[in-house]
Amino acid sequence: MQENVNTAEPAQYVLVERQGHAGLITLNRPKALNALSLGMVRALKTALEDFSQDSGVQVVAIRGTNKLGKPGSAESLFGGFCAGGDIRYFHQAALAGDNALGDFFTEEYRLNHLIHLYPKPFVAFMDGVVMGGGMGISQGASLRLVTEHTRMAMPETIIGLFPDVGGGYFLSRCPGHIGEYLALTGEVIAAQQALQYGLADVQIEATQQAALWAALGEQTFANRAQVEEWLALHVGPQNTELIKPDAHIDDFFSLLRVKHIVDALEKAKDDRWAQKTAALLRKRSPLMLHVTLEQIRRARQMSLTDDLRMERDMVHHCFHDRPGTASETVEGIRALAVDKDYAPKWNPARIEDVKPGMADAFFVSPWAAQLHPLRDL
Image 1 (cartoon, rainbow, N blue to C red):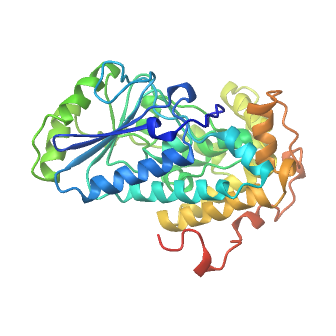
Image 2: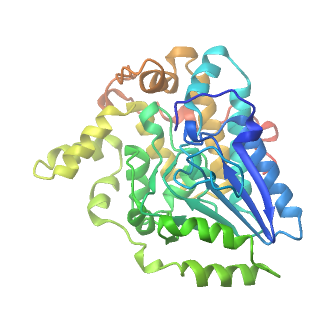
């Protein structure tokens, strides 16, 4: 998530180039931590579709930059991937009743789907901040690279939202109940945790990225097998033995309900991590904690397509069930990014006040199946 809003022409924010057999994409909106606008989502989808149909392109890679530049120039630097969607835009659009807000989520989720099913090797350089929508455009990559600077999270519950962009799908597939932990708390993790939780494939040094990026455009690849062989040689294989659950997290986040999780954490008086985690959960929207827990557990049995359709239903309810400032999401964004008082007025105010069944409405589709915005995925 990123609070900066910028209405400048989006073409300069997604830089696309073809180097040899590589299609290279750079997110180039560093002042907003490469936060995604609708124009950027559309530009990314167009670039990926064009590369998929270009028989001369054998591998596609995406990165973010922390300094304005041009593709291939000295100014085009690594250092930040993508902080997510433009939440101040969400706030403005919701209050204005702008239909483009719905278009943003529909088209973003289509982009996420495209990346997960992409027909060519797709390499994500997940350096720096990788959050929210940034996870959505990288988790489906065939090779997810992280560095010592990676800071990864799905922090949507902080603003009264839920981990969307396929978050239900990829978080629920983390080992054990780590998905529930990351989804509910929005905690930031580093490279080693990302590898352990199955949210990254290989860690490289940040200083290696520029040379690797340049080398991708200098190689001759005849097919996918040659690309994968070259990548394995230059970045190393994934060590799947690193992927394992965390028994301490599972002790709490395997419990049935949000109230059970928080109660157990608060009762662990001698456990500083448990006390800190309970305090974090007490700051989140009580209603959206319940919605999010249900989302992760439903998604564990779902395909990616069904999960994205469910999330499109859910995000509609977030902005439309309670219009305007009554929306938990609008209120959460107000507190974090607009008024910046960091004191959201959640409704219900406490976890104990969320009544059974309140979360259920988020999982009822507002559309008939043949009219769903993602019906043709």
